[in-house]
Image 1 (cartoon, rainbow, N blue to C red):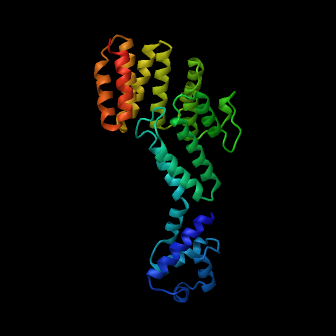
Image 2: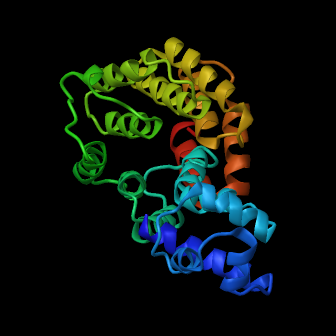
Image 3: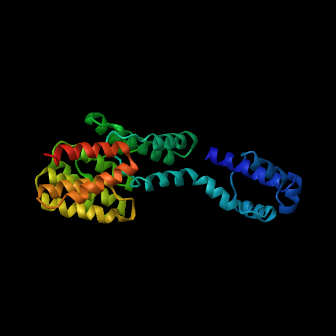
Length: 288
């Protein structure tokens, strides 16, 4: 809270000065002791919402709203990063430096433990995405994220409390399991949790589709990839999901080419590294 109070103190002082008021004059207008105003402007007084209401009238500005804007700024910034998780395809080995730098900045400037923990959890999550081939390191990063500020029961998943971020981390942790049946078991636990989040469910269904494809159950895989793509309709079309659908259709001897072509078209416009990745995969699988 210390950094919040300092930020608000500076804001309040600047507003008073912009109104060309001395502390003495503001004290006269608000009937609040000048010592209290001085302490508020130097972050030495606890925030009193009643006094802020009174000062708001004297300064003709909503100080209460500004205080809460500052208080929840870091939390809102984290929520924006979470909401952007599905704004682009995040394939393994891709850079997540923009998100990690923003989260490190939030973690370093906030005094709120809950925000620090949330930021650190997401930092570990994004770092795990950057890991391409080292499965052991990827699993460690995700496990450390799930364990932040608590014990996590992997034997009985239903014994844990989950945020939407926790489900996303657990989803990625399942992906690192070499046993597709064990992987599917965790995915099914998440599916049965009935999470009200289209973005998360879209990625979940995509991962389930991939797993059924590996298990050579392509009809079920097709059901899930269609569900994933339908839920993803509010976001930019996912080249990775379209590519996955083309693989499944190819396996079922159905018309796969429009989806492979669309996956290449989208990735070429949005992400050259992803385009190269899908192009090489298409050459190896579809071109005989």
